[in-house]
Image (cartoon, rainbow over all chains, first blue to last red; front, side):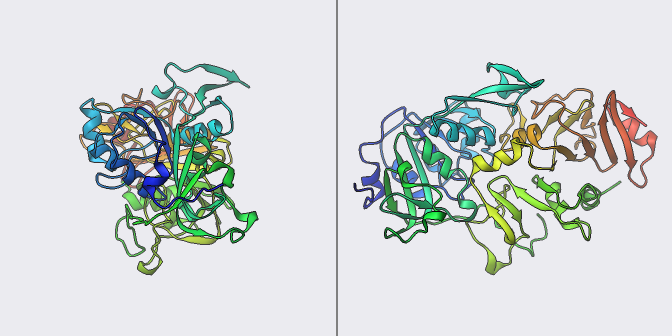
Length: 234
Length: 208
C-alpha cells in the first residue's frame, strides 16, 4: 500500500472528470487544501460541483477555480468574501445551493457514515426548506436533508503519515475531517509527513482508512482578516 | 440612545455564570469586552473552537487560529478544538445556552432575517440558521431603524427568513424588547428615549 505521492499532480492523476462533485475542507481561507485546488485550476476539467463552506477569495483558494470558470455549481453556506463569485452568480453564470453551515457539515458526516438522509430543525420556515420533506417529531417540525457522497474529497491537515492518519491544527481542522469521510476517494495535503509511529494513536483525528492519497504541500496559509488586540475596530 | 458599545454592554448583562455562548459578527463580538466581573462564560466559535480568547498581539498571530468572522484570535487554557460536524452538534443539539446575533429585520412574532437581500447581497446564512434553530436563547442586537429611518422591527419580515419564531429578545439603540404573545414587550428604554419616540418609529406592535 502506497499512499504518499510526490506532487499534487500525481496525487490527482486519474481522479478528475468533467461534472464531478468535489467536497473540500476549510473555513474561509483557514485549513483549505490550497495546493490541490491550485493543481485542479491547471487542468482542463470543468462543470465541477464543489461543496465547501466558503468559496475562497478572488485570487486564492476556490476563487482560483471560479476565475478559470471550472465551477458550475457551489454548495456553500457563506460566500460573502468573493466579488467574482457574486458577479458570476448575479449574472446567472454560476449555480449556488446555499446550505446552512451545520447542515453542510452533517451532510458530509452522514454521507461518509453511510447515512443517506437525516432530519434537522435548521432552515424550517425558510427558503432552505422549500421542496424538502417535512416531518414532525415530538411536536417539532424537521426537514429531510441528504447525506453527501462526493466523487472526490480534498482536505488539508497539519501532519500525516504513510498510512494516511491525519492530525489537524487548531481551527484549521473545521470541515476537513467531515469532508475526508464523504469522498469516494480522499486526497490529503499536509504540512509535514511523519514516519509511522510518530503520531500518538490516541490523538489521530482522521484515521488513515478515510485517506487514499497524501502529499506534502507548500502552504501560504493566507490570513483573511488580520485582527490584533490593538485594532481599534472589531 | 445607546451607541454600539452601550448596546453590547446591555447585552452582556444577559450572561450568567457558567454559560456557553456564541457571539455573532459585528456588535455581538463587542459583548465579550463587557463580561461582568465574577461571571465565567465560555465562548463558542462555530468554525470549531470552544473557549475563544481575545484578539492576538502581533507575535501571537496564527493563521490556523481564527473565529467565525475569520478574524485572528487566541486560545485559552480551557480551549478545545473540534470539527464542524461536532461544532454543530453543540449548536443544533441545544448544548449552547445563548446566541447573540446581528439582524437586518425582526418581526413581532420573533422571525429573524439576517442573511440575504435578494438580487443585491449574496453572502449566505453561514451558521445562523443552525444557531437560531438549536440554541436555547437567541438575543438580537441591531439598530432600531435602517439608514433610511425605517423600522427594522416589523409586523412581518420582508427579507428571506433565517428562522421562524426564533428570537427571544431584541436589543436596539432605543431599548430592550422581548418577544411575547401578541407583540414586542418593552423591557427597558435607553436614556433619552421616550415611549412616544419608540412608538412612532416602530412598525411592530409594542406592548408597554
